[in-house]
Length: 203
Length: 251
Image (cartoon, rainbow over all chains, first blue to last red; front, side, top):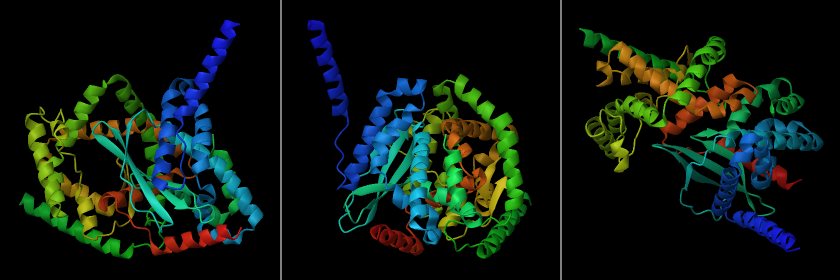
């Protein structure tokens, strides 16, 4: 009996501490939102390092739980279509957006494999009132080198919540890289071919 | 005689970049100038499918695996230290006097106290590396990149950066290195750079078109370096953002 209670208490404590680790994310401030999301993600990667080594797919779960909720994948999906989005009916766009959501999760999962407990340093917050978009920058330090990461965030006009729609590493924008890859496919073959490529390239 | 010949070559290359770049300005924000795409693509295939797969990647994997981290850092520091004089001049040419002095200070300090550049003492006392290539100087002076070039073994470049790299090699002490030491220095840099992206190569494999992925990333990174990270959004892009905003609001 005693044992059971102790086990229960320790399980409870374990869960509690795991929950405690994940800081509440405040989406009304873009800077603290990105900082909290990044901290939550990185601390999970660090604490689950061993399990992820054994089962690399676990990283997808981290992405799904820690990143996707703060991602404006609808906006990003439309940005990739660029001027072509008006050519397609809403159902097609919605279908494509869902495909893109899964695809972007796998892109993020791939990118996160790079994180090996490097020190992360956030650049100071700037004024963001009366702005629709802003950029939150951080540096990932590795020895004498540092990699500049910028999160491009936008405020949803309806919900007033800030969410990320692009990640820029050393000036290389993920969104514009995707745009350039999908633009020829979009121009020559259309949205179906883009969806097919996205489905095929995810691991 | 030799000097004046070099100078002539410099000048003619510079003029060439000027001519080419004026014609090659592309209006579309995501489409970069690539008139040589057919040739570039075949060189890319060679670099990516043959050279990288059979030579560079296996060597880089072995280098990262067997070379202790301390030795790797030391060798890279040494290779990069030799670029500090050219960094110093290139900073000065862009009017960044403080960075220019800092680069020179790094060279003096690291070459002496830092044992020929092996130990980066300067970073420890807050003299950070301010890397600038002559190609970036030309960019900051308003010269366009010119067409994209995929070079055999050396990878992505463009006319402006090609000229810049060529000029950089004439600054001391890089000009005084014999060919074997130059190759050794470049190999260290290449192995280290390739080794550090092993983790990210999946992204390249998974991309819909690796060639245009690399081209796009190359030009974006170049612009970032030339403008020191201060990149503004174009007017068209802002307009598109607003259109998408409106579209999403109407759903």
